[in-house]
Amino acid sequence: MLQSVFARVTERKQLIRDILELSAQKDFYTTFTPSAHWPFKDVASKKCRLLVLDSSFNPPTKAHAKLLQTSLETYPAGYFDGSLLLFSTNNVDKTLTGASVLQRAQMMEMIALQYPNTAVGFTPHGRFMDKAKYIHSWFADTHTSSQLELYFIVGYDTMIRLLDPKYYNGTSVKDALTPFFESCHLICADRGTEDADFWAKTYSTFGQHLIQRIQLDPITSQFSSTLAREAIQQPKSTPSSIPTLLHL
Image (cartoon, rainbow, N blue to C red; front, side):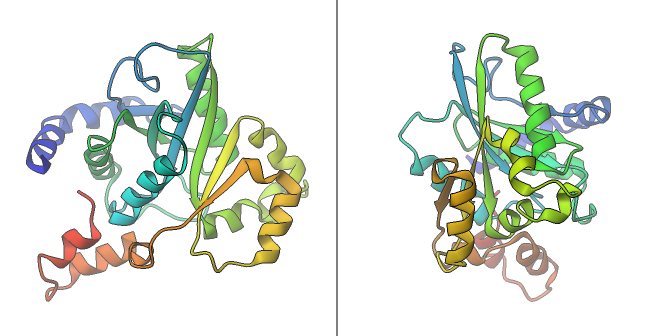
């Protein structure tokens, strides 16, 4: 299966490059969708629940795959209409290093092809509120009679940054994020040892129904794109150790 996925993505390289170049000024766009109906499986309905894994994918790792799989399994079967692998080309905290945008698009597509009804998307926006805004805008243009709910998968560190007042120019975090939570949910992956006071305060502010916590197993939770890049660059890395980290 992996060989066929690799061959398919390789064949689409020029098409992906063209999409990236033509869409560079757009607020949100996709380089791959599994069908013309996406994010719906087939026929559109009144409500669409979209699971979003927003990451750097530099490169994709087993942890990325586990985040997606665990999130899908946390909710009832068929709860989500579709999934989206999302990359922000202008991250608020990081500059673009490592794999090019084209390379990431190809690697993301290789993951998407291994999961049901999963697409690959890009946005130049780094803030979650802006990402949500423009995904909603794109959806409204294509599905005028349906309502979209977004479920963003985030790590604990991202959760901390999202609730950091420094990003909101004097506006309270609650006031700034209330519009976001009107149509968005968060799925936060942590190791179960994080600050209980933080969660108590967060839930009292926004409500537990808006933020779902999940946990990865101790081994998978240690995998990271940084670790994968270091393994690839190490001359003494064994070929078998790299696939353990990567999900390609």
